[in-house]
Image (cartoon, rainbow, N blue to C red; front, side, top):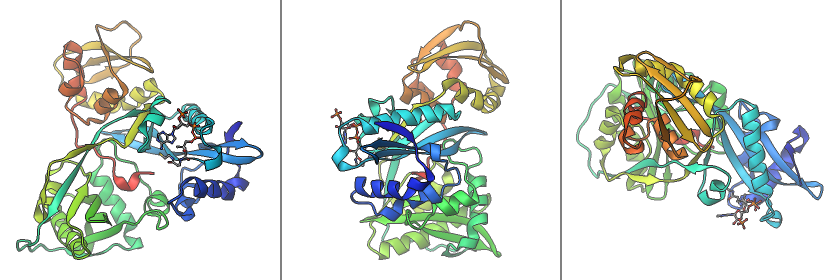
Length: 390
Ligand SMILES: CC(C)(COP(=O)(O)OP(=O)(O)OC[C@H]1O[C@@H](n2cnc3c(N)ncnc32)[C@H](O)[C@@H]1OP(=O)(O)O)[C@@H](O)C(=O)NCCC(=O)NCCS
């Protein structure tokens, strides 16, 4: 077995491989990974060669993901596939290991993947980090509502305005992807892979908000909805149009993973009755470089520490090594001196803390270390938008 980077002349063979590995996915779905991703590099596609042909591959998509005002570099793992006749011989595991080496050599901080076969990846050091999803039952009749917004279908020339609204709405939102126009057009909304309908709300000739969704059977999945400041009612207007259209097409409920924001709650309540949220387990994360990851977060951690009244040194122990953190009002560093306290964290605990996915008191074992860490890792309205999955 040879594990190596793909060569440009092998892209078509790789597409054939993916077509054979993913039985129910059309070949064209995979084009955007080679031709539409602005951060594509041949080194990010790890192929396994056996019997003179490509038999297995794994792709890495490079993304920047926010933690407040800082960003982390993430390697997203996509298209893990082995041709059926070559399965069960360790090829995919070897390609996965090679991907982690490439991510580390490239200076990436952590890895992400989406899967239903978590055990396979757990053996390779990946951990499931639980997320919350919601559903809501569509109302049959809507109360009267009038707002000065015109709702219409999204057009390609809306892309710059949509990107500006996205950036404003998510400027410090943890776990959101930093997007560019090329990425939005070539990858995130590539028509070969994504089937979202995007709606735009405008007022006075300017875009004020947008909503992206798609129907799965009886559910209308809402991938994202964002508005500019002061235009929260545009989300309600969008909700009415988009969800009424979905209901006419047979949808009975909404399914969504959206940030906990009043504007979004109001839009959902406009058209539907929220049901109890549920936990899903399809996201797996893996530390690539613990120290680099924390170094990159220091500006955000310092911002959060400005109102602190205590100080101290905590060592965070993980399966990927130990991280010393010195926290004082307005200052956070990674010192080389011994810590006052030590706390042992599993990967799910570490990532839940970093992205603010839960209450620190529910994540950390109680004690002085927890008191200090909880002030620089508060719970946040974080979200990983479905449009950015890969
Ligand atoms: C999953 C897949 C990539 C594994 O490739 P592979 O080259 O056979 O992987 P390896 O030989 O390194 O590892 C095989 C192990 O994966 C496990 N595995 C494979 N498919 C699995 C599944 N659907 N659920 C759980 N475990 C699975 C096997 O049980 C095997 O474990 P074993 O070594 O204890 O027998 C391959 O089955 C495939 O291409 N499947 C279709 C595409 C797919 O579903 N990709 C994953 C998307 S997240």
